[in-house]
Image (tube, rainbow, N blue to C red; front, side, top):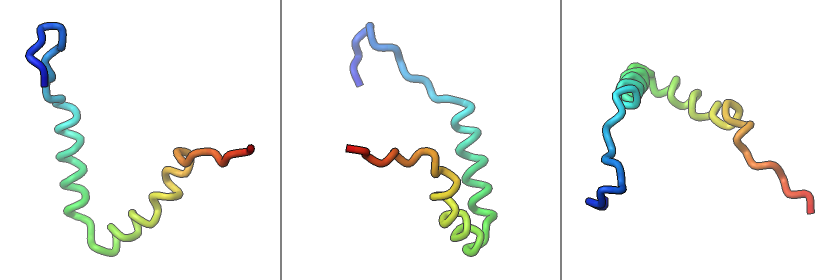
Length: 56
């Protein structure tokens, strides 16, 4: 990282840290079966993020 005065100092995000901690706790409480089911559902859950097919 640069010590340049024009570059703002980065500060840790409290909300990000809290969200990350909550997610880690949630995943640790899951069984292996629940983790596998959650992982297999990711393609459906985030299907709208898949790029559109090319139409050339």
